[in-house]
Image (cartoon, rainbow, N blue to C red; front, top):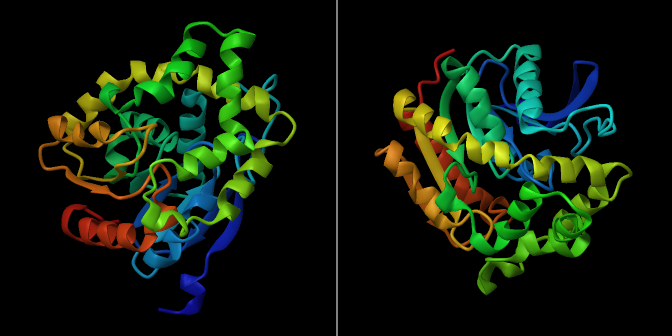
Length: 297
């Protein structure tokens, strides 16, 4: 395998006039793994994983609109909803000519990816979910209480605790919470400083509050997501941080209710598992896709 194939390329595509930044590595003719990040990060979260799988797969990791290096139009000019982000993701895959691919979803990437699967089930060869939820029992009660209060009624009082999630302290909390002491010094502060800098840009307050206020639309789709899993029998691997207080381990175990042969691995990590366990997760993914996914072009 040449260094050129293993190198990670930083590219852009134009979708509906918006510039979408993405990372890409691997052979152009290899099976595709589409990596969809969560809040408050970007494709930066996959920086350690991509080189570990680029010898076997074509990995593509876009920054959602409003995140990372992608365009971030003002919330007055673009409707930041999960339905819109899912449609943009679909159009992004079409712009790159991706006809069939496996999904890696985390946090926000889960409802975006599952909406894509609902619209185009024939495109999805497998799903890897890393703390990417699709069940109500996966929603940590304490972490989600302020979000559901905002969804019920958007006021300055309900916005304040949710706004704190994208503060430097709130972002650091998401990285550190649930990570055992033995792994804590493997967390690079660069990760949360990187996210905090991007979240501090002008316009992010309206963008992120709008998306969080729309999260109820994802919960409303949970029954449809679960029906998709039952009827498609899509191969599914859950690699879950058992210390995550946002999407708790019950959400991982719940996949077996609709996919009895789902493969579930609870690892000693938190919400951002790749920060401490990228090699272990890469090994699980490689083994799973080789055994379970139909990766024919």
